[in-house]
Image (cartoon, rainbow, N blue to C red):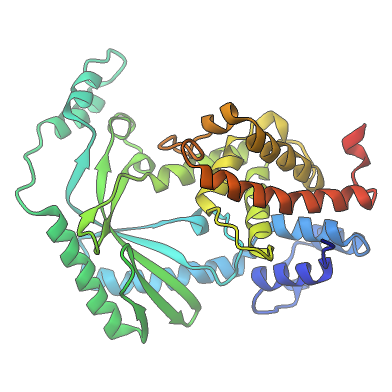
Length: 358
């Protein structure tokens, strides 16, 4: 199907600059100049804008919204820990009016890897005294005498009550978060309730980003399996710096293709980030933005046809396999690949990728 790139470009502009601010104010001069040089190559303009991401002024306002909600909660519940997770902290979001995930975390208790794992780790000869002390603190900790799920339930419901008094639009029905819609700045903040999880690696390194969390599900009245959102952000940021900012560009690009598709593609941001993170650095660290389309096409094509390779792909933090025993995800990936193929064909059709063939 022939694409209306002028219309697609306008969609990207509206997402990244929803306030319609003069782009000469927002964009770097070099980026603006390059866009002007491509005025008659609409497919290239679309690709570059899709990879560029949201302008910083809108991201800062998204954080401002999150900080407002955090301040309300912190005034009443100062002993909780508050962290951000998701695509905004990793700068892989594609909408100026993005929501942001604010996690309120109980510090009264935590779960951890098995005591045996900690005991085995403490025998390592390469660990220092302070590292062994941290591991011993977990091994020798007194069991929590309270009811962890009940404590999290109370934190969740207290937050619902407080936020409903402060803000007009608060959705309390969601199992894993409270949806707060702010009008100034106009943003949505998802407030998630969780508890900490300590791994052996986090104990050894003492890095905050390696600590896990367990999100509370109010409908099930239980904590969900452990997640490592801060480690994912750290790993994505690290690899992105190693490929000169190109990892986040390709993540944003695939997210944009999904958002602009005329069909519903059930392939999450988590999945997109994982398959992009899996690509070897050597394949794209020095590629131009149009060449990145070809890199992505080759990668998604390989995933689609090579079951052994496909089943090897893991999430950024290695906590799960993206496609293994999930045939429904393969079908959704192929839909995304179809969207990508159209863009690639238009590049070839317009004679814009000769360098690929040399």
